[in-house]
Length: 339
Ligand SMILES: [Zn+2]
Image (tube, rainbow, N blue to C red; front, side, top):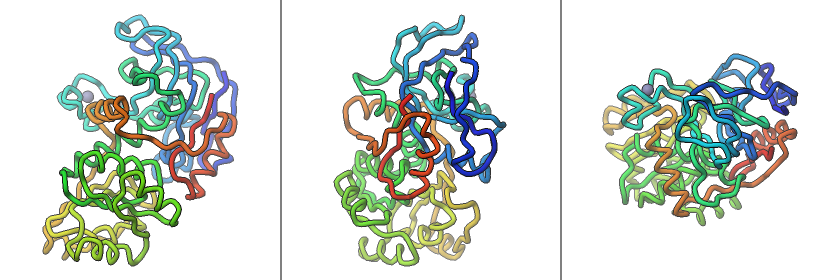
């Protein structure tokens, strides 16, 4: 079968289009014929090998949608012919965390397309519990465009205890994760200040749920303070990390929380300890998402409350180009590979 592998860490050109044997499902797995696979920032980080390293070769691709073509001997609740999309997080399904839908706290935590091969391929095998029915008559491209980002954003907002009528500052709002957070925070009844470069993308975010847009950079906190009457925001949704962290902390209100769910620009930043102490700030880490977050997102998708935005659809063979598009930083919305 056709697949795109990370064979060595490096630039987008290190992705290799290869012909590999079609996998067979184990007893607890299903085999999915992939129709579309979303491209995530995570795929780029895995390929670069700087922040995360996975055993190579690895077929990336966390978000994919397709048809079940075979089921393992022990699979009772999925059937051949079913339209499914991948739930991103791998977990044991049996520990106390998993039973509460908090799979991201499970000792067996992993990610489809990272811990195991993903959807940059004609076929992929995944645990049956990670194959979830596509809501309604959603098309393949849309079905492959939202799982990881919306579930992660949902988990982060839950961890950050965002409440109705609070103000949240969303970093990197034009990227997949930030864009999801803008819509989800709006759904939760919060006031949203989006951080984004470029007036055109800023204008678009205002139509997607943002109440105001600010530019990133050394004056971000000043803009936020001006927009909040000098109070600051209740929650900062942070994943850009090193490049923005100091300004993010300076944007918080007294008693404010910062939830950190990614480290796109690097893992080291200086922290104003005096501000943490005198303003009673909370810095909260959040890794991945739980089943309850994914269920929440599927429910919102099913009733049309959230709308992922797909900007480019490319053939699987053009995965290198897809990675370049994400790296360009000029996107608003997702790139999806068509298989
Ligand atoms: Zn578990």
